[in-house]
Image 1 (cartoon, chains in turn cyan, brown):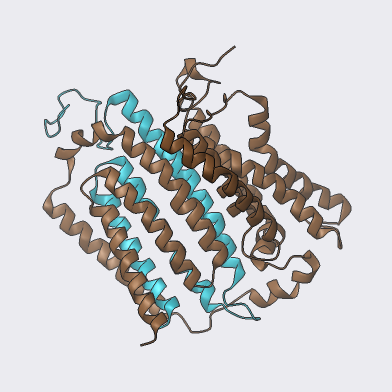
Image 2 (cartoon, chains in turn brown, green):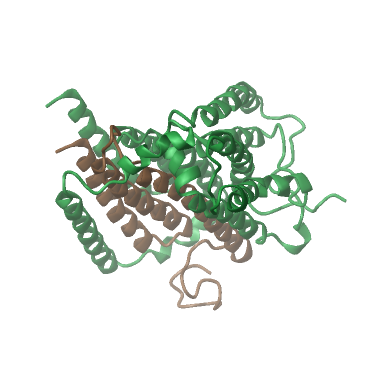
Length: 114
Length: 315
């Protein structure tokens, strides 16, 4: 197995891990973290596509590389906006989770401390 | 097994373990610290994929600046963490989610294993026209010449993100400064490190931008390192974030995309195509555009990390 394929498999595993975090963790910040794991996993899978496109004396196809660089920057911008929204939610409601009834209905179903 | 292969497997296991830590760590703060380590390890993986430009970006933005952003947020959200204890989904949901995630990961792994050894590639075309751009680094050529429109739009996304973050400010803070004020007496250790690191980091950042024309590096990586230096100075409270209604700040934020777009439109008149550069002048034009992009990135990233204005504007 080449190092490229190994990196691709790590990417696949990262997508799985991140998806689990996004679904299971109730905290918005942990969801943002997990979403970034998915993102970097996808980038890695794309990275091995670049590696398999090695040609013309290059070890790796430059087009996917440039797209991943663009992707990393955009992922950061999205994370920054998501973090700002989470902090604002915390300032307004004192909570930082995304439960549907969070803070809206006083009393709620009693599952979480209001 | 060769040494490199053993290192690869060790690195892969380490990346997976640290990623698992960021998902399963008991506290959000511990998880975000793990994420910084993860970003740095991931940049090593990118080096092993012979993508040094991506490795630099991942280390500077993916690990460094994103890490500062998340750690800062985790520190402020510590109290809220307690309120989510009762909201964790039930065991059945977790099991179901785990099965789904294993399936998705397995499907992706299958795709990775089934990829042909030699995939389709644009590398020959990229190398063939490289002399016309005057550049030596094909990744920079893709970013600033072949796919310039992508890069412009990405810069616009950064500006939009800043607008989005600022618009979360309370009405009375609009136009004010984000973050904390400069300290009368900065914490000595932090101040010492910031004063040591910033001059070196500024030189490294400008160097990485400049060599990006021919070697791995470029506007994103150099700009991100400059941004990190400003963030460090603000964290040490040796300086404070500027007021968000400052004219120079807003000009610096849009300088990169504005100059890039202007150069693209000028291409219609001068070189006969949107984003066409006149032959022979391509490299100076590219470096000119990149210089403004470095400025915009170095200003945008710290503003995104600093968050919405939290102090009333001074008149």
